[in-house]
Every structure is written in C-alpha cells, then in structure tokens.
Image 1: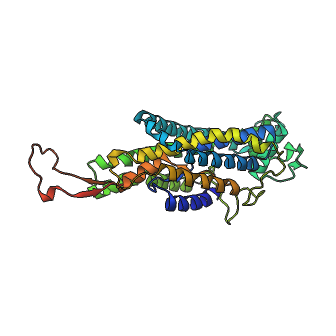
Image 2: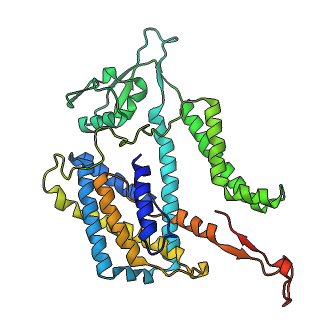
Image 3: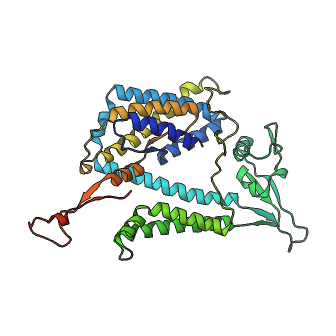
Length: 376
C-alpha cells in the first residue's frame, strides 16, 4: 500500500515538473538494498526505524539540494558508456539476487505437521533457538502474530507459536516427528522457472516463423506480462498455498502499528538526528548515480530526442519528493533504468529505407518506406 501511495505522489509530481519526463521513476534495487541495511542497523542498536529513516531522508534532501545549487550535476559529463553499462549490470545482478534470495527464504515459511504415525510417542514443538529477544519480537510484530506469544514485549512463549511460523520468528523445531511440507518451495521454484521460460520464449517470437507478424509482435512486446499471467493462472489452478503479497483492503499503512505521518523521534534519543547524516551521505551518492546515469542513458544521442535535458531540475524535484516520502514513511522513488529504457523504446519511431536484401544506391519506392512504432 505504501508503494502504491508513494508511486501516485512521486509519479504525478515528478512527471509534471521534471526536466526529462521520459525517465520513469520507481523503487530500484540499489535503494532497496540501502533501506535493508539501515533497517538492520536500527534493529541492532535498538532504535525506531521509521523515525531514524525520517532524519536520513531530511539530510538526503538537504545534501541533494546543495548539489543542485552548486551545479554538481555537471559531473554527469564524466559518465562514459562503460559507467552506464556497469551500473546497468549492477542493477540486473541485484534483481537476480533478490529473486533467488526470496525463493530461498520460502524454506522458513513451510508448513510443519506433527506426524507421529511411525514414531512411538513422537513429539514436535517450537523451542527457543537462542536468538535475541528484540529480533524475535520484531519478527512477531512484522508477521502480526497473536499478542499472547509476546508477554509485555519482554517474554516470548514459543509453546504457543504455530509450527509453520516457528522458524520465521527465530525459533527452532524440536522433536522426532516434525514433518516439513516442501510443496510451497517446489511450486515456487516451478513458478519462477516457468515465468522465465515463457518470458524468454515469447520475447523471441518476433523473429519466429510461426503466426502472422502482428501476433508475433504482440507476443514479443508483452512477453513478461503474458508470462506472469500464465504462471499466476497455473498457481491458482494447482491450489498450493504459495506465499502471496498481503495488501490491506482499506487505505491504511501495511503495518497496523503506525499512522501515515512518521514522528521525528518516537522514543529515539536526540543524537539519532545528527547521526542520520552519515547514511544520508551514502544515500546521496547512490541516488545521484542511480538518477543521473539513467537520465544519461535516456538522453543518448542515438535516441534523437527533441526535448533538451534537465539534470538540475530533475534532482531538485527528487530532493523535494524524498522529503515528502520520508515524512509519510513511503519508499524512495528514483529513476528506474529498466523502466526508463523500455519507455523510450516504446516511443521510438523506426523506418525502413529499403527492402531486406536490397543494395546499392537505388532510391526506395514509397511502398518500401513505412514508419513503425516499436513495442514496449
């Protein structure tokens, strides 16, 4: 829900006031990794994450504003094609890594049953694995488990934890009749491989000899979407309870423990405000690289854009939006490389000057020159 709300605010404001609206903004992989690191630091030192994140965003917006004022966006002139390709490769690796890690984490969400048919007086219970109480309580609140599990936010009764949730909150299974069901993990693996297979296969349909050209172009343009729809229908038909994205049915934050406005401290000591400048400096470097390199790729000479670039204006609008999303507890939106490239390609007009195989300086006839609009 926060992602949808943040996309509505940032998307409308950015594309109305930015200098290069062809650049599509979104939640990118590098920013997601940064958010995860900040969350882990807050959990380790025992401070409120959202309040500390608010000050990180404040410092980030201030530093980006100083960058705009001092004309530091002119540094994009030193960005070469090697830098662009290296950064695009980094984003691709992060996406692949996140997909594999989410699949691996499903092993901690598998259902467990107490199967004692072949075990005399067998037992299976959830016990303490030695994890810190703060980490266990954080996992309990994140999973919205029953409050009877955590007594006064200080004691965790593992005996009341569902066996399937035991390892998710940091517990351990104990007993000789614990039977783990691996159907979720196997089905998730099949869905991931099937989605990749269908997407690649349909993407190559453009150069296939099957079907008319319009059908092949449609299948190639919407290969990823069609692959996701096909595998989602397969998942629905099989009926295995694979992990799903839980979205609230009403307009409210995903976590019920907070409102839309993030308090500046919420129990955090005063020194967390100046300390947030350290991760904010790292965030500025990351956001500057993510935003400006993507914009440079969009403004390449081969794209032959008629509208001039606006690096300073884009960064100024982005700094204001970072302040807004930090105050509301929404994800950071910056230029998304993959989405921006696909957006530019979808608007590209291609023309064929001569028929395939025709050579020489012969002028093509009017029937051989037809503008084609590329697919998304």
